[in-house]
Image (tube, rainbow, N blue to C red):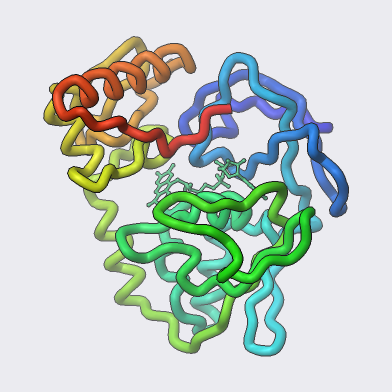
Length: 255
Ligand SMILES: Cc1cc2nc3c(=O)[nH]c(=O)nc-3n(C[C@H](O)[C@H](O)[C@H](O)COP(=O)(O)OP(=O)(O)OC[C@H]3O[C@@H](n4cnc5c(N)ncnc54)[C@H](O)[C@@H]3O)c2cc1C
């Protein structure tokens, strides 16, 4: 067990100190909820029992034209590796923070570029699964249980210009602590457009706000709390439902 201060650990800087089980070998951890780097997660005042993968699952290997990556490996480490070994299709990891477990579980990405695009298979506590057997759509997968390892197909040719384009696409993202996009984009409009349209862009409750740079980023202005974050989330849902009859679906994971 390790004590983690989630106010420091999570990217949105919310939460207090909790015990977290460190997993060093594959086993039965069904009573725990797995976390990665908490770059897409808000830890509530009363979270479930938490676990995270230890350093044993932080590795990158190449075998038979496949890239085999431990689920505790960070996106930054994989990006550097792919650049060094001239491997294509990982440029989207530039400024896409998280560990491979969280990135694959969330099918993280930007526009049409998603981590599943070049995924081959995953290893979980329930066995190994090929991509074709995993239900996955925009920011959603059917993955149940703990991801320990992720395998990708290797294609040659790291594209530095592509990396620059991904970084540029983030120009409108705020630098304040956040957990990435707050809501998934509904089919009809982007979540940012909807939040702005109901007058909540820049709206503040206590220490939390919908960013004035990008309305779909829930940001911590300093000492924001879980309760303030939830008030803003619920307010946006209510107002968007009232004006557009659209149910906003949260992208951030609340534990
Ligand atoms: C500034 C900023 C920008 C961002 N931009 C983007 C973006 O452009 N696109 C995007 O998609 N996301 C974005 N995000 C969100 C975040 O980067 C991704 O969701 C990332 O995948 C989170 O990884 P994590 O390790 O922090 O996961 P966590 O937040 O720790 O966990 C996320 C979910 O994954 C599950 N999980 C974690 N590890 C495992 C595992 N080993 N096995 C099974 N399940 C697991 C957790 O239970 C939880 O449900 C952004 C976040 C920030 C702070």
